[in-house]
Length: 114
Length: 115
Image 1 (cartoon, rainbow over the protein chains, first blue to last red):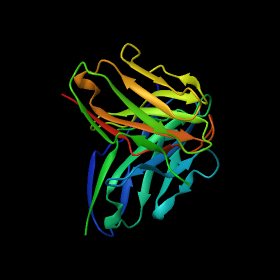
Image 2 (image 1 turned 120 degrees about the vertical axis):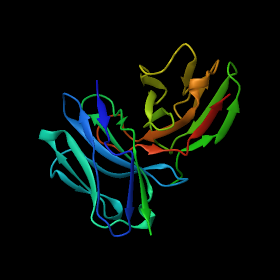
Image 3 (image 1 turned 90 degrees about the horizontal axis):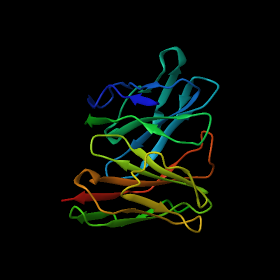
């Protein structure tokens, strides 16, 4: 069965610090990979996605993620966080075969201190 | 473009009562999903529709949960009877395609509290 692990439950950073959120998945086949973000009081929205090609993908608001197939990882990075990045971040995977079902990690809450 | 609409936003019921949630997906989106998000966890898929047909309901507790999408647009999710462990946020999402890396667009969710 598919599973997604997010190692950090709560991360607290000061503005301008660099961010890296870990995500590992378990699945025997090829997957599509996603990071979703939920800002306080808002809907879940897509930050970035990977399905093929360059393993380094760029998303909105300066975020990027790198797919490392050998490590089954898809870590999220941002060189310099802002207070407005305070949110909950979810990693998700969907198998490339079959329906577009998303399997989510438990999420990482990011708090950025001004 | 209007987003995914859900109602109600909040609902408090007693255990053993019934409750229904409504979802209106983005216009033209054939695929609709219902997720359950328990506090401290990520969303978990309950059921997936393609038009008015069920694609995957393997995670739906069918003894108490039911869902329908009769005309291939709006959908309702019902719980009858509710249990304490059903307290969660119920998210509806829609997508333009059934398969592939297509983005799922999420609604604001319905927060259910069962007392």
